[in-house]
Amino acid sequence: MPRTTTAEPGYAIGTVAGLTGLDPHTIRAWERRYGAVEPQRGPRGMRRYDDEAVTRLQLLKAVTDCGEPIGAVATLPDAALRERLGRLAGMAADGAAGPGQRPTSIAFLAPGLYSQVGADAASLGGLRVAAAEAELAPLLEKLRDASPEIVVTELHCLGSEPLHHLEQIQDLCEPSLILVVYDFAKGSELARLSRSGARLVRGPLRLAQLRQAIEDFLTIEATASRRRVRPMPTDAVPDAPRLYDDAQLARLMEFQSAVQCECPSHVASLVASALGFERYSKDCESVSPEDAALHRYLAAASARVRHELETMLERVCEHEGIHI
Image (cartoon, rainbow, N blue to C red; front, side):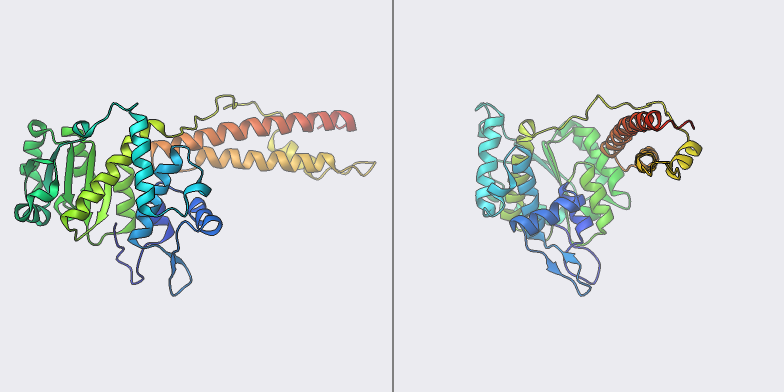
């Protein structure tokens, strides 16, 4: 796993969120409630996560995405998590996946690692080297014909636009796994690469560590069909017509009832709050298609809530004889 270039060791929780796909709230909850990881504290008291913690969170996310409760797996050692993931991967394939159906060909854009392969090719196990280059351009020329199922690249080999070149590799051969190995990088850059589908691991690596990383990520991918997908509800009202405009809400929020009932003011405040979040969700910037879909859902659901609250407010106004 990667290291940041800051003076403090380890990774901030925002970087870890980008690398694991877990939101910061979930990471903190798993830490406090279940003891899943034990981050260090930097000089300013902020959480810092080392490489082992990032790897562990990736394994825990894959297991819980398959339906396992975090409370049942949070304290399992990494080896037990890998074993459980292996069983889940086999179940996902209905028992049809055997060793021969695992990816077998690999391409290297990693001169340092590939020189280690030359010294000990047996460490790759059953992986066949389909292509190996020290520079990007020659590898791109070979990828379509070589069609490797795994691509291992060192980050510096991807040049000044690593995300663009990573997408080129994906388009050319659609590998099952792209593994990016690096020593130092900005957290924001790592998060972008991770969101694009790359798997990240900190170097330098021994070949045994490379094989372990490949096995981990392939097993995680193999469980994809078992993962729980929570579809966005479709009963939200995306463009629910407003029953009260801003001026009417403002007057109702200040309304003083003759019988000292403050319900009109209270409910009008709730409507205004729901409306504010609805507007915020519509305007919120998104960094990925998944984020955009989430904010569309939040805006639609907020509209539904706002519409229900306006209906409540209408009922209250009728009861109180209020005409705005």
